[in-house]
Every structure is written in C-alpha cells, then in structure tokens.
Image 1 (spheres, rainbow, N blue to C red):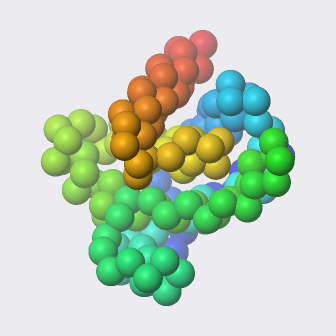
Image 2: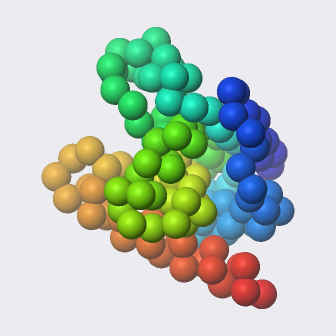
Length: 143
C-alpha cells in the first residue's frame, strides 16, 4: 500500500496523513478491498477544469476527479481534488472546510471501492457511505 499526497498550484491542506491513511485502509477493508497505489493531487479550480476538459470532455468545475486503476480487490487511482471547490462547497453546504475536505477525500476512495453516484438512487447510497466513513474517521481521531 502506498498513499501519496501532492499539490499543484496550492498549498498542502492541513490534514493528518497518518490518520487519513489508516482511515482509507479501514474503509477499503470494510468493502473487502486492499489499498494499492493511491495518489491525491490537491489543486485549484483552473487545474481541475483543465483535467476535466482534457480527460473527460466535461466543461465544468468539480470537487474531485477520480481516475480508477483498480485491479480485482486492490484499489488504486489518481484523485484530483480542487481545494477551491471544496471551500465553496463547504460554504454552500454550511459545513466546515475540514469536514468537506474529508468528505471529498473519502468520496474518491468510495468510487474506487465500486460505489457510484450518477444513476437512480446512487447519490443517496454514496451519501450514506460517506456519512458512515466520516463516523469511522471520528472514531479514529478520538482514539
């Protein structure tokens, strides 16, 4: 397992990488998966829209783009997270920046574990999975 954190045009967010790594492993394990190579690339809105246009032919901002390289039960991928969009979403959702960042961090892992959010009823399943994962993070942080 190797989880890496990079930045492109932004400062590294203030996250406890040790706890986040344990959390990611715990969530992967919950879904019967093991962690392979996972790279988080924290960026700004201009980078996320560039990636969205170049690789997905989408012309809009988003909080996360997940490139899935999973093989079998070993999850791997590159996860681009726009800290600009995380910040604006936290204001819009009336939540803290830290809470929204954690939600987005695990959102990508849930995608790698096979949970989707585009089809009928899938958004609600993803939100339930995110909420469950966030409760596990709170347990890890309190121990």
